[in-house]
Image (cartoon, rainbow, N blue to C red; front, side, top):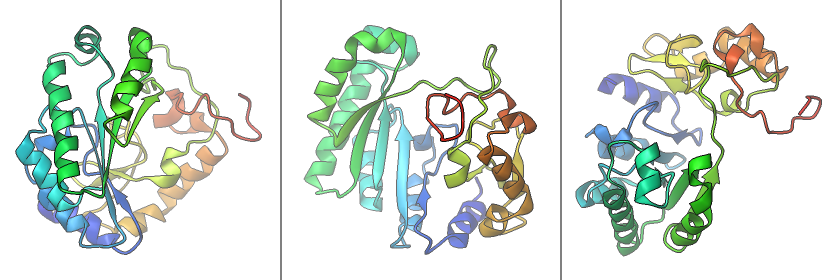
Length: 246
């Protein structure tokens, strides 16, 4: 994303207690500007910064940089507690190296009396159920928390059927492509629900705009079939919403 674009997103929303996650469907640590982006965000005392990463690129230097920049929460996605299982769900990455890097990050954070949190996640899958207890025991002793999180089917995958329930994500979050387009959901990789462009309007104008309001009204009523992007999405299928069938 061009510098003027990400700065505008941040400048448009200063003072509102926003949580910023400077990534979309990508590995955030690939962007060497990340520490500078975090520092820019944290000029606003009401702002929080969070990061999701697989940990593969997080060497000691990068760990120091993002800690010094003021990152509030780092979520590491591991999804396994053995090299065998990891090879099945994180193809091409070295389990032992990733675990060592995450442990080193936690060590550096503790040495620097870092006030931010570290979270280790495993997606609940059939291939890792047998090692979830060991995963939680190991990482809860080291990180601030370890979690088993549900597996979401990617919208528009074969066999994904619509769930006629509200959507929480769009009520709390906004997502941007690198060209400045704002989209309804982080799963919108094909531009099916563009709600505005921050190079043309302010973030608040987009958030309060008619396009987003129309989508929000439909999703509040669980009418996902009326939105192309959401018409084959089963997110929150297991969440209970009063007035909607489970």
